[in-house]
Amino acid sequence: MILRIPLLFEGSKDTQNLYALFDSGATYSCINDSLAEQLEILTPLHKPMRLATASEHVFMEIKNTVRLDFYKDDIRLSDEFLVVPNLSEDVVIAATTMQKWRIKLDFENDNVIIDPKVAKLILINLIHKQ
Image 1 (cartoon, rainbow, N blue to C red):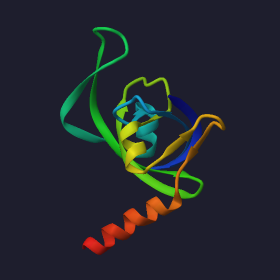
Image 2 (cartoon, rainbow, N blue to C red):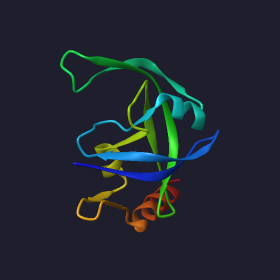
Image 3 (cartoon, one colour):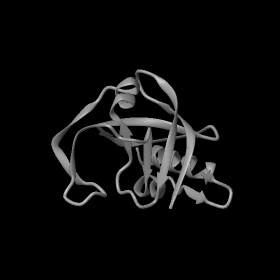
């Protein structure tokens, strides 16, 4: 299932409103390569990833990632995004990111639901562990 909504993305170089496609069938969160370069300094992968696409026998090679913050309803979230050359969407938010932040998709209202307590609980747990 898929939803597409605008979100604010923030990197060390820039902040932009981008359309994020929430895809519960995707494994990795991804960002278009040209947008990634505008927002953040690319981090090269130790070893490139070769990922299968929806087309049979078609693969793509991923060489870089970025860590970005993104905001929904003033709630700050963050994750690592694979930098995908010529990605047709601005950003794809995958199932792993949705699970990490307990994001729920409301298809009836075309909305993404994030409980503000989830972000606070994760930060509190990190502080107490140190």
